[in-house]
Length: 493
Image (cartoon, rainbow, N blue to C red; front, side, top):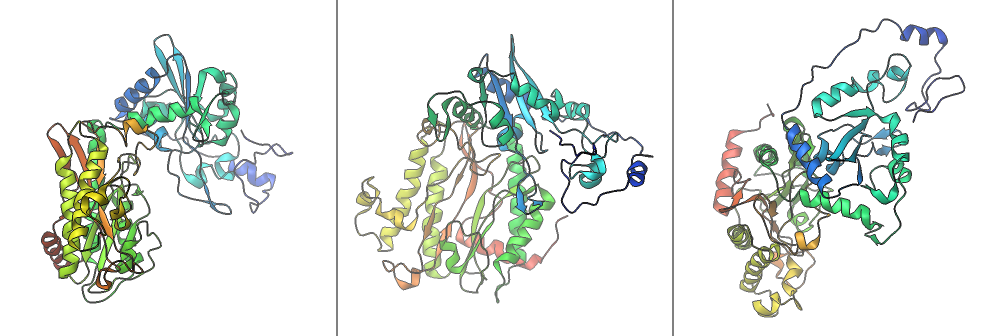
């Protein structure tokens, strides 16, 4: 894994602008370093990860499963994006370091797990100060035993991975592909049918992990609630800095929320959407280079990703001057009624599609009340028509968890065409969007975009709104906004 120069010095991780050090300096750098240990102990959530690995292994008896996390990705030239582990790898291990590979090998009683990882730099070579992976550059890394203690998982040096992969029989191995090119190349894809661009056998592994994620355990629900609570604080931060009488940039508001996300969590869970005025009609507006204006609306779709990578996903629409106009309120109330109908309908056993149709019918009825539908509500809702979707486009929501769009590899019959079960967490986020150039709506509606989104847990008694800490009704939003402004700006802490 580590290349050698002709003089015997390692080059892995060095850069073209690094100096050629004289022998005297190299000798001096190798001396006088005190060894240290990290005060690590087993993390309390370790049993959760072990249960997930056991459940995944049970789905593929007698087979070896290979799950990489991936490596750092280049941002520009020799700089990288901040590393975020692969979601499936993190879901099964809890490890957040780059380049790791989880290998689950079959045994007589199940599977043995090994985490191949890059251990701390040895002071016996020059990696610790010359390589971009070295500790003087990136800080103290775990030893193999420290990582094993922390994660309750056997570990091995990443340099041993190539030999381990070379021993695997392709017909009895499944790989989570697309995360690590070295792993993809090392384990030949077993010939057979391909699904969505990868061998069907490997596709089945990705499906199995996604479907395990559908049901959240108590620890996961607690992580989601923490992320949601931090998100509520982030929305409060933004509201406190939002002037009622003048414009501010969307990026200022994005940055205020990002400060909360980095302070209280790992980061934002996705690119924040901060859409002022007509930008609210662009569903995935992430440029955020506009500005608020009194009298217009501000749509913000933002979520904090917690320290264990579970993310919130919440959208609120605020009247910049503090009060909805009568027309803005009319549209807002339609979206609110749609969302509330969907939340009220959710319980174990109902279909995902029926939640969608419940929300969509309320939107269609609201569009009819606004005089926009060219046909009746029933005709608009007919699957051969769906003309109402000109003004909504997206569905009612999606699964939520360690990914903002969680469980994305699950089979349709288990997700989009399936039923909801206890422990599912999903968003409910209907919206109406009237584009500024849409000549089929009255001029006074053009440029209005409204989406209300909350994160909902399915329980035996129905839906629990995890993001209920943020008000949703129009009058409550106005009161809340006034209260936040009265409280004044604050720093996280």
